[in-house]
Every structure is written in structure tokens, then in C-alpha cells.
Image 1: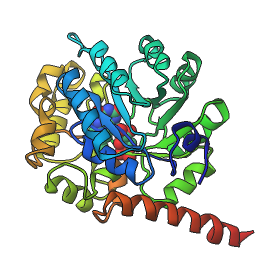
Image 2 (image 1 turned 30 degrees about the horizontal axis):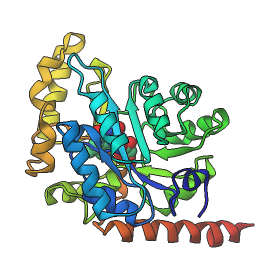
Image 3 (image 1 turned 90 degrees about the vertical axis):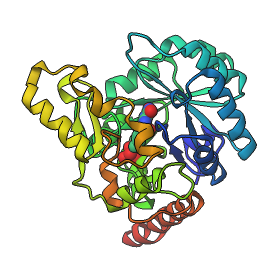
Length: 323
Ligand SMILES: Cc1cc2nc3c(=O)[nH]c(=O)nc-3n(C[C@H](O)[C@H](O)[C@H](O)COP(=O)(O)O)c2cc1C
């Protein structure tokens, strides 16, 4: 399949694996790229720019296909060493960067000069238009369904994607709720140039996370995610568990007076406990509603190839047959 995204990234299939904290390591990124999509290493999971440089080198040893690095720009009192992470990406010869969070404008000149394609993740059309205006090559449009941070507008992809399509000139990926060939065809029909998947890629053989995490996703239904940190305007969609129930109770009890310190135990340092130790009640970790569509733990190659086969069959047989 050829779309503006396969052309832009030089890949076979229009499927991206979004950056995921404590999931997007070299093993998963390389598996997605080897399967013909584009895998992404999560920059900030690496403690230092030197660690990121090592992870990039590791990924390069596992694949000769293009892969990307996610750099999430968070508001922070003591920000990570962003210049160092950007340097690691440029010096590591990475060709695609997925930015997320705050406006990446400040970092674009360095990335562009190195010939890196930048895809910015957005949850609103106005942010996507801003990304286009500052020179991003593409955007990833994350609907309300998505695992992670859906923003505060709550617009689901059935509205958000066609709104993006009628507003943007640059290529864009549909993100949030994408699971299979049906998602891909629907995304293309709504105007996107491919799909970005997060949660679906966690439940794969190669995802370097504890087996409990994969089983929790398979067991979950579309009713099992919750929105946390809404009162702090930092909404995150997470899988419900005992820690999340505790957090939600605090939000209820404290109302508008809640502060980050109040929920520190349920959100800070949770990812390694979940992803490495499989301690599934440790607290809030991102998971999409798409969990309801995930029923197995295939290899990444199986997932990508069956997604493409299903998409092709829907287009040729199901849709073609209706005409
Ligand atoms: C466990 C997990 C961790 C994530 N961490 C990040 C992150 O660090 N940076 C980022 O930009 N997006 C992050 N995301 C969002 C994904 O890249 C992607 O946009 C999202 O998962 C798409 O929705 P889906 O889960 O419905 O496929 C994360 C998602 C999950 C599920």
C-alpha cells in the first residue's frame, strides 16, 4: 500500500508504533520496522542522552530499516536534558522523530538540518495546524479514545480525523483506537494517510514488558479505562486498577483543591513497577479503549501482516463488492 506516509518515511506499510514510556525500547521499535512499519524508541525512558544513544545503536543493530525516536516535551520545573536528547538523535543518524506534548518549534531547526522528518502528535485540529505552520512534516492525530494523554477537548476520531483532513495539507496518521485492518481502512476513509498504534503493540510477543501487562490488555474490555488527572488539566487515559481507583477517590474527595502532590504515589514512578515488575495495581499507566478489540498476543510481524491483509480484503472484497 502506498500513501503519503509510506513515501515520507520510506516504509512499506502505513503503520507507526507510537512512543510509549517503558515500552518503546529497541526490541519493539526494531520489530515494527522489520515488519515494514515504523517503530519508535521512547527517548525519555532512557535516563540520559548517553543511554538514548546506546538504545539507538542497539536498534540499528537489530534492523536496517528506518525507525524513529519519540521526544515528549513536558512542562517541568527541572526539564530533562532536551538538547542532549536531540543531539543523541541527530548523531545517531535517526531519520524520523515523533514529538509530543509542548510545541516543538524550538527544536525543529536542529532536526531539519539533520534531514530528520518530524511528526508531531496532536489531540486538536488547532494544534495540528500549528504544527503544520511551524514546519512539521506530518502529524499524528490522537482522538479521545487513545491511550495516554487525549487532551481536554474530548473529540473522538470519527469527528477529529475528517476535521483534520479538511484542514491540513501535510500527511497525517490516525491515532487512538487503532487495532487492525478495519481500523486502517476506516482511517484512510476518513482522510488519514495511515495509522499510529500504541496499546495494540504492547500486546505483542516482542514488546519488552512483563507478561502480566499483556494479559491485562487481553482481559480488558472497552469499558475498563478511566480518565485521571482531569482536575489538573493533564488528563490521561489509563487501565483501571486498585491504584487508579484510589486516585479517582482522591480526585472526588479533594475536588478543585487537588494538587499533584496529593496523587504522587499513584502516578510517580509507576511505569517500571508495571512494565518491568508486572505489579498491576501499582497505579496509573496509559491504556486505550482499544483494549476491547485486543484478544491475542501475536508477533509484531503477524500483527502487521494480518492488518495489511485484512485492510486489502476489506477494500477489494467487502467495499468493492458493494459497488
Ligand atoms: C503505555 C503507554 C505509554 C505511552 N507513553 C507515551 C509517551 O511517553 N509519549 C507519547 O508521546 N505518547 C505516549 N503514549 C501514547 C502513544 O504513543 C499513542 O499515541 C497512543 O497509545 C495511541 O492510542 P492507542 O493506545 O489507542 O493506540 C503512550 C501510550 C501508552 C499506551
